[in-house]
Length: 230
Image (cartoon, rainbow, N blue to C red; front, side, top):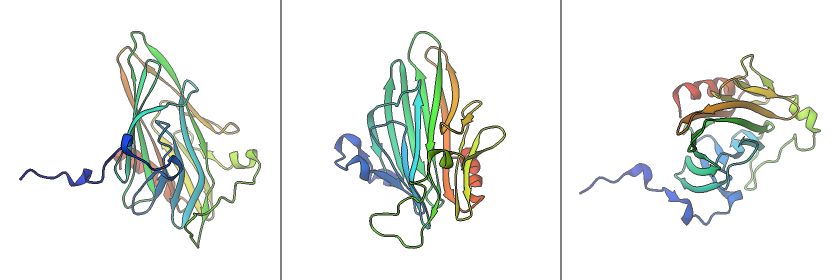
């Protein structure tokens, strides 16, 4: 008998998915992430009991535009999406680690055009950090939701080289790390910014790790995840 690929036994083609986007997500044993599947790169909401970042947003844009999804595929702790923006083809894989409070967004940008392209990359980042002792079916809210934007933005701290971003509180930590070239954090706009150069037919692959854990642990998890993958 032919062998069955058990890793794909629950895999679902997006064309056959009837789940509303606001209820769509991926999960490991310790972290769940909401996935707006109509956007080829976005992540919204992180829950990793006892930690929660209900208002978390990681929204990458290329040339200032979101990338609309043309196709997607789901398999429990992973979602793959494909999109296009002009001559740029984008393929992404969003994965959460099975036994850690962290996840990784990998995306490949291919220049299908006949001339070289310099592509501005902008990552809009939002999110609070809450420690929740009692969980209900509806999920927790965010204690930062009513704060002025400036107060929320100033909670982020970037590493000297710009590749690590963390919001650390006594109750927990939300962190992100990236291997995009020369990333720059713009505090008051809440954007990580970089540029990638692609020749005709050339592809580039980039990563953004995210984690929600105890103070210090989230930043370490992001660095480790970038080195080894999920």
